[in-house]
Image (cartoon, rainbow, N blue to C red; front, side, top):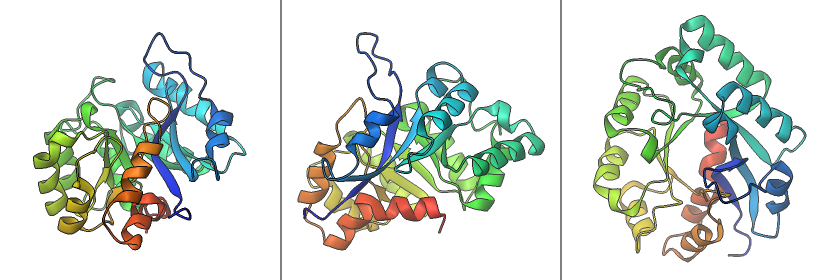
Length: 249
């Protein structure tokens, strides 16, 4: 299984919220992980400044830090202000395409907004037409908001990250009913849970992620490599599914 490589769908650059921990995880440190050291072929990254300080500033910082580092794939953080109307949403999408941004992340709880009042509908409508993936942490979004997004934008790939092992009864109906719902696995550490998900729903909507730099990628890698599933399913989860999403197949 040593030839199995992983594309991390859940990582960020910059200082995280622990006030007692310095932030050594800059772009050059992320790049140093790529390759044989931990079998990482790429990282999908947003910048912590876009969450904890200012989204526009953090998105620009991400561009600056990841310039000429092809193994780092950019994720921008979106706020309702960039989706005030179709024109503003169009400008944001055009900037994403200009700067080769691969996906969008939203933080409704941290940034004090909700999806169900249509605050991001103009942007989501454009992303829906282009099948741009949208990511959100489970603790940042309500289940009602998840269902609103999935029902309203049926071509929009949505990835729920940081999903704990006790949430299976919430996740399973979403996997069953919505083909654009994807699950990131960094916190979904259930005994034979990966096997159960693959048996019920297939492997095509399961994504490897680590939570770098707060968490290490090796435990989730070990979970995937040791799972009692076929090699094709392991390859899907490790990197093929994410690469397909970013190609917008």
